[in-house]
Image 1 (tube, helix red, strand yellow):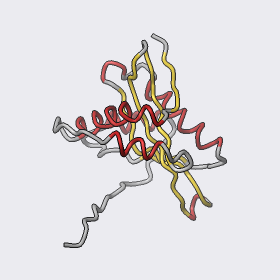
Image 2 (image 1 turned 180 degrees about the horizontal axis):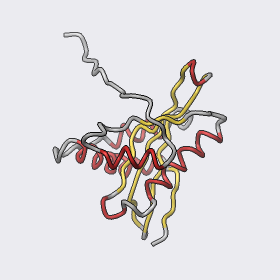
Image 3 (image 1 turned 135 degrees about the vertical axis):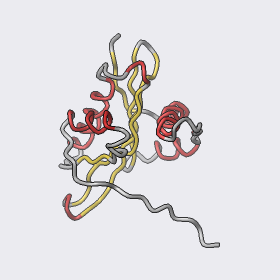
Image 4 (image 1 turned 30 degrees about the vertical axis):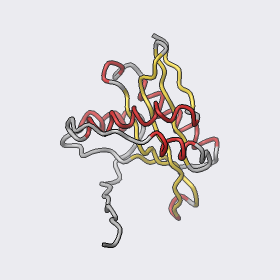
Length: 153
């Protein structure tokens, strides 16, 4: 039951989209979310701005993490943000998530970045997820909010 972490390539776009779709389905209480592998491939073709890492266990993909480049004054330029992280339920508590976070941290370090952020779901509903990130060195810095922008009608 060895785990391997590898960076996703554009040809892995379908796998990345499927794994992150599973994450969103779980977060949305079972409302099935299907994501576009075309969008995933487009993002994977932008290696300076976007990366995805896959956890492979027993010959199958059991987890995925996407990482985006962000910029801010407080970071003195670029920093990394874990946009999405998913591990199949049967592989949770078996270090897949930890290894994906380590891959993200190494990705950032290799670029000279000093900050890695993650937006976690609400602690009152997803306490295990928040605890996971804290166990892996993340500090609570407050909530993150989204504004969904719609085109002008």
